[in-house]
Length: 141
Image 1 (cartoon, rainbow, N blue to C red):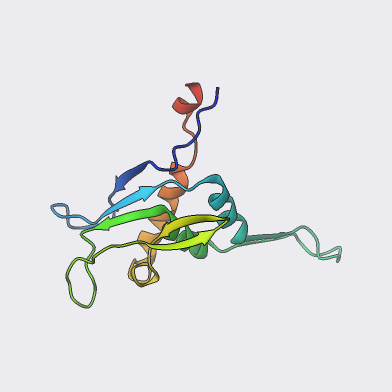
Image 2 (image 1 turned 90 degrees about the vertical axis):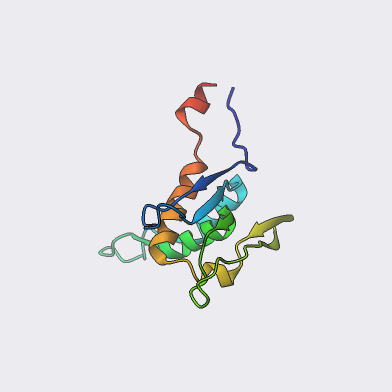
């Protein structure tokens, strides 16, 4: 029997780039449901097998930064100890809510997304994708 992924589960994640080991920024990372994960991954890639010209190569466009932005927008559920660059004070995190596919999704507000450095966005995107895969241990159960 295959065990499904618990889309309500979360875990804490600290970036390897966080230099404050005593008071790090903690991202609460959630899982994406299959519908949202598929939508994000399909939306950010294009594949063209042939343009109709025999000498043209196949083309693959992969918008990795756009993908990571969407993954973080839908996959991060809370952020603690993240300093506002203007005030230096910790932000007050509160999700926005949007409707997609007939469901409500809690998302990271654009104001906060715009403050996350690109290298942290990439790291979080990879972590969120990793969490949506069924582990070998879960497959055995």
